[in-house]
Image (cartoon, rainbow, N blue to C red; front, side, top):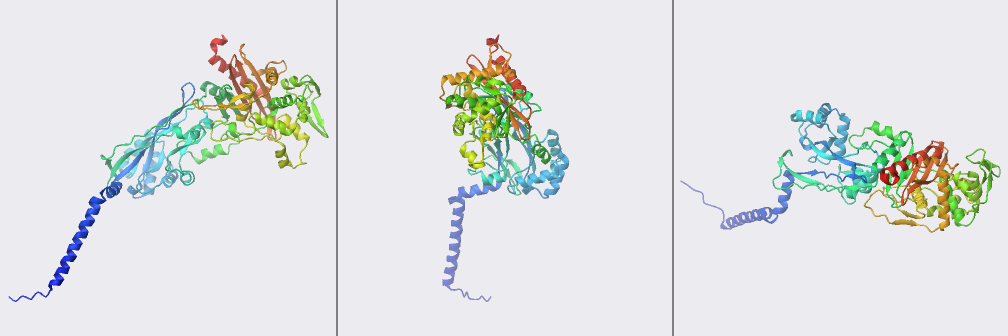
Length: 588
């Protein structure tokens, strides 16, 4: 048999063997690099493809009142989610879900787009599912690939006090928040965050730390089982907080303000604690939990009663005659008045061609300073305000914390306005304002604007003779002495004597505020603030005490009439409830 002679040279054989050896060395090196040298790195990457991390939301801390009653709780709720990669036809699946649980397709689709993070991430479809809805989802599970539900804690606000403006609410973190405010990357899409009130103010305390569980998925991304290589990370609940509200007082003010617009604040002048507080009307505390339909939201947004406005910190009002004690303090402080000297009130005061009326058409007759405070004579203060330089008067007002935020532990509040010469010149021009505008200032009208919360600081300084603590709701919060005013003792004595006369004098405008309790003494001032948009606002500010214990009240009822008729009786009921509840033995 003939054989061909091998024509390959020995040199080529050597080269071929060298190439094969080099390839083998490269393969072995690459194998070593992947399997040994970079084992940990690629193990993490490979596990990332088969392990899905599912967040376990941490329950938020609870909010308790001063007696341990729960004001804000957590209740379990069910959330329906979709894993996009496991869904072949999204529109068809959403249509089926809509039919099964009676939620409109547009809401499910909107939520899907809103919470979509990627093909492998759970995307929220609906929340607050009932047991009936869950049952129908479970019955048709085979028709709904990629659809899951899980339990999570949701905020629950009991309705027995309904302090929505104070407690606030939580809302879901959206894309806009992530892009604009989430600088420290603390939140993820769909997380809950305190958005108003105490929920926002104490977010860092109430918010816990989420946990996590690890699930194995197959090549198609479907969940198979829990990962045995990873322990479940348990969530850490948020801390509870205790606030100073008294639920009985809270229920009372809610009842008294039913059908009215305004604000009520009850506080302890000796500590700064807020005992009851409310802005009326308000909104259901669970308005922003679960699904808020556009028509529900618009019904509150466009309501002429403005239930979404927090009148306590964001309502700006003329204070009316409740400001007259400040005019009195300025007159006494600068030695501009003789308390016994009288002027004659015939029901009006004329300045140039314009007439300025007193609230009492027939007039008060001869009026000195104590009578002017007790019977709230406008004409007396029309005369007296002209003795005080405007900047001096504004300085007195700022001493009593007006024109600045009160400092209460809520997320935001307005400053109001105390006019001085710079303000008047800036608004009207150097020669654009007259003495007539000063007369309005004397009775708490014109350019003066205050919030009910600022009036709390003022009345507490009256009650404590210039020693005031910053108002606060959190009991554990240390509240240092925020204001200490130095006025002569005789000035404080006169202030208390005249404000006592308002509630006890035969013609005192605040007689209806005096509690029907023998050992409790009240002091106060009524106000009827003119309102260009309707009927006047009714004010009552004052305090009541028994021995060394006292509470103060600020009551505003919009468009309701005279403060002595409308607001003062509410103060009486507050005083009576407080002292009978906490000092029943001393009263007997």
